Structure formats: C-alpha cells, structure tokens
View 1: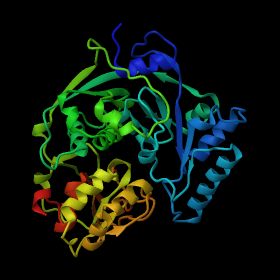
View 2: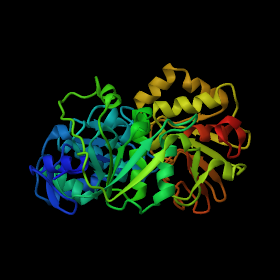
View 3: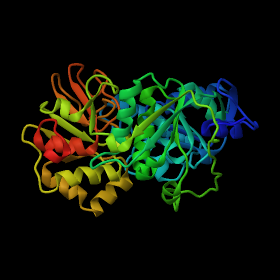
View 4: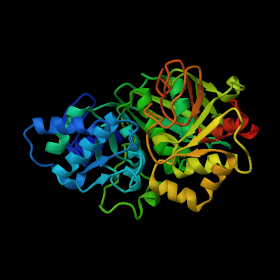
Length: 419
C-alpha cells in the first residue's frame, strides 16, 4: 500500500511493513529531549515506572533554556532539579546556560536528529525537527518519562495533508510568511492531529532555517508533526553535523492525503498575526501604522543566524525609534558567536538594540522582555495568546525578522521597504 513519509517512518520504527492512518503503533524513539520547565516532571514519571537508568544515555538530551538565567527563586529551584537529575542518571547530553541555547535551535545544530528519526520532546514545538526529514512531535511529561525508560512510545498514525509549495518567493518573503499563509488558510485547528507534508518545486528556494521556522509553527495549526523530504539543501546542512548514518525515505507518489494545500510562493506577501491568535493573519499593509512599544527578535522560531542577518540588513545604519525598544536574542551560543563574527551584533548595538543571552525567556512570558498593560509588541516568536508575553492587557503581533526590524526603526508597523 502506498504510504506518506510519516507513515513510512512510523512503520520502520515499529517493525511493520505498512501502517495506515488510525493504526496504533509502538515505535522506537531515536531522541528524547526535555527542558528545564518540564523535564523534572518527566523524570518523576520516569522514576514512577521503576526504571533505574535511561534506555540509551546517548539519545536523551536535557536543555536549560526557558527560565534561564533564573528570574526568581522558583525558577532557580526548577533549574537545580533538572541538574540534579542529570547527575543522578549520568546524562552526557546536557546543555547548561551559556553552553547551548534554545532547545529547538541546538538539537538540529548539534546533529542530534537525522532524517528518518522518531524524535520526541517535552515541548510542543518539537515539530521543528521535521525540517530535517524526521518524525518529530511534542509529548506530555508522562510520555516523555516513559520514553526515557523504554526507548519507545505509542503513536496513532496521523492522516496527512500535502502542502504543495510552488514558485519562487519574492523579496522579504521567508519561512515565517509561508507558515502564516498556511495558518491564514486553515486556522489553528485545520490540521488537528495530522501530518503536514511539504512538496513542490518551491521548496528549493527555502533553506533549512526557513523550513525549521515552518515546521516549528506547524503545531499552531494543530498538526501532530510536519515534515520535509530530504534534498541537497538538507544534506548540505547535515554535513559535518551528524555522526550517524541514516536512510532517506520518501513518500510514495500515489500516497493518499486527507487534503491538499497549494501555495504559489511568488504571490505570498509579508504577513503578520494580530492579537490574540496565530491564525488572526493579516497582510502587513492592512495594519500599517499601529504604534509599537517593543520589538522582539529571537526564539526557536526566528532567532537563527539567517533571521539575525535579515534583521541586520534592515537595521544597518539606522536607529531604533525613540518610542520603541528593540530586544534581540540569538537562539544559541553558536548563532551568537556567528553574529558577532559577521558584525551583526555591532549593527544591532549601533541601532540601539538590547542584546540578550540565548533563552526562551520573553517568548514564554518568563522574563527579559515582559510587556506592561496596554503595550504592543511585534515579535518573531510563535504565539500571541492573551498574556503570553506579560500583561493580559498587552498585545502581541507575530511576524518575520524583516518586518520586525523595520517596525523597530519606524516605531510602528511598516513594510520592510519602508524602514
């Protein structure tokens, strides 16, 4: 029977010849990831199973990224708990503040995921790794705990939606605009428990950072996972990053999909998600002029080196508006170092930006960028729910680094070419 790419990965991981949507399979997992907020809870579940050691110490990764540097004692205690579990179970893949960064940036960056893998994480945006041809999804703490103990987890095989990307994107158009276009069309439940599988000749114009952004926010459509097939761009990215062999799987040409979305990338325009939902998508020109108190460029969605390059391209030789503050947070130490070497950090500083260490802090409403009541923020992050970044009376708009940087200069929402 013809299978989608996700079906093929789950079939292989569960030692089956074929699987169909709706099947319940018990699949081996190749990576279990957790961070400071939820991994301590996962370790509690792990110990409740009676397990005394991790199923494979090389396949479990712990990252301090959400509430670091600790903004309060409660966060410091949570971070301490994770570190104690790391020592107790002799973990080798542990990333302390200053030695890693935001989990969804460093997992691909450090080569922990390869095509065909089954990867699970204690964070909903684990879908990010589908950009590398892996089945990747977020799980609850109990499931993560069991995955760490057994090295396998059950999944219901999802139906798939085929997203066909054709054409060449225009100037200032990137992965954030593509996923916002998808959200505009299908909403936050349009792909509920489905796999989003990408195809089309337009993919060759999207680099890995674009694909990581798209897969990251795919979960905002309700998707179980999102996935790109491996191509030369994928292989180039993986070169010198991964240390294990992998098989390249492809969807069958006659695989059945629940639905199909076709997007002409040449017609996609700069987009922005207005408060208070990622699918409240507008074309930027529709809401130009909204005054902004804060611009935030960072996070697992758009804090990678390409994002910083795009922001710096706009900010070069300009100043942040006197009524607006700009916070830039590279999403990993490697990204930070690269940005320093390329002079991007100098550009941000000269423009009047504040630079923060790699952390999820502001994105998840933790610290280092919270909003007061009535304040408006344009952010490159992934969620703009009520109270997500601070006060319940604040307003968050989601957009690309190009639009965010231009907005910082203008002090109001503008198109990139208007900065």
